[in-house]
Length: 606
Image (tube, rainbow, N blue to C red; front, side, top):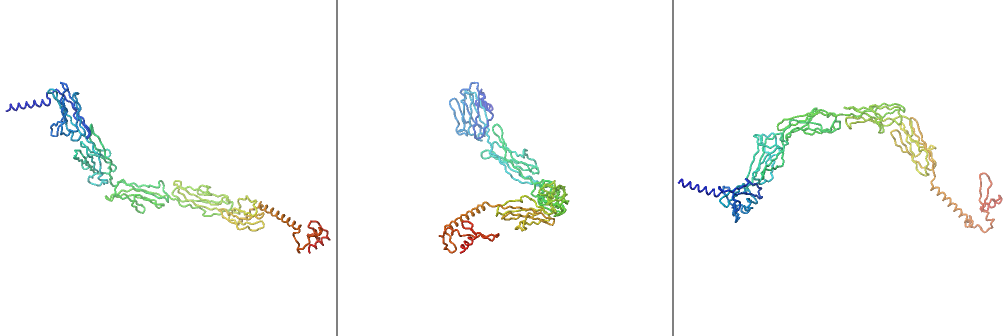
């Protein structure tokens, strides 16, 4: 029995060695693995040599099943090439080469995950020599882009347990991708009671992997500015690749451990009338934190982090306390700030209001304003600076020095901080008429002429307009000026006129004379000439008619057929105050004797 079993064993060994080429002189060379992306084409090369040469070789391709058995998928010899039917590769494989070159290539198209098996290339020579080689096909699938979910956006440091920050997921990868959490640039690993990363993986029905990772951690204040994201590492032929999710951050609530109060505006020194803006900020971030201001002088409180004090006065000066109170823990922190409101009182001018001085006299005036800071004072008259300092000296007063003086008090340290006061100086003296030119004038006949007279003096002078014969001219209009009065009158030019501007006050008088000469109008002269010509023509016509007898005497029956001498008896009586003798002239202009004159005069009277 033992001998029979031993013989059977020897026969079996002989068969095995014969079948697999244990005695073969065929050398087969193949890569350990070939890597390919799912859906692409894979090529597996089988190279071989033989001591008998490489002609007439039998080539067979097979793969190892999940159970470990070989399944032939291709056969080739010198007479045929056959692709086995009914295998997963039947429609997707091809073999290039006849073996004559010592190399054949198995090409697999549209590679799938199930193709990740070991492929066997078996070569047998013309004799009993044979050999085989094996290559594992590795299939890769690039996963979908990873996603990140923000599970909790607002977290308080007062939370006692770890809280969920977020979840990352990557789907449909092969081999299984890896997920790593990062905070900024630091990879996160599980730490007991501090941080926990929980990974999970799933094999889809397609055979691809989907992986999720959940981050849990105990949040502290230092996490307030952190950015969290996931890095996904996956395999590709020849190495690995990496992709990232977008960043997420969390709002961390934590109480303040300190507060800071300051004056936001105005910048620099504060003056009365300004609006003050006080700010108070704690170094915490908590919805349960309440910030308030309190004025220490009177404990007045404002529950706000920005305090606006409009139109402040010096009474608003003092200390202000800013407090941050956490209503969850009832812990509070405070900060104090002191403000000072600078002031400048209204200017006081001495002497006050109106001042009267005599011509030639001196005046001393002062201007002062109480201030919390150094001041500067200038005196201004008619827009020009006339003096610096608190004291104004007016020496030998004249009408030119009369008027309004303004003292302006400023604080150089604060722009716009100023006050002012005024002093009206009147100089007592007799009237003085200004602008004494343009008094000799020539104006057209029948035109209206405006005359003006500017008089200064104090008390304010009274102005009366008259003519050379003492007649008052019309109604004058007057404008009272700072140093006197301005009077105007309108007159009609009918002849040469002399007009007087008479100014007077209790201190004296002054007068200004206007001489106006009337000049004829060219149109009037032309009209007079035309009238004279018309009268001459009319006289000539009347004389002609008379000579022709067309003009009758009183009776209307005068005999016009008398001789020439009788015609000349018509006379005109001319008398003179210096003689009683009447002179009769004929119509022809001849002088008549006295006797003849009387008789012919009588004839005319008939």
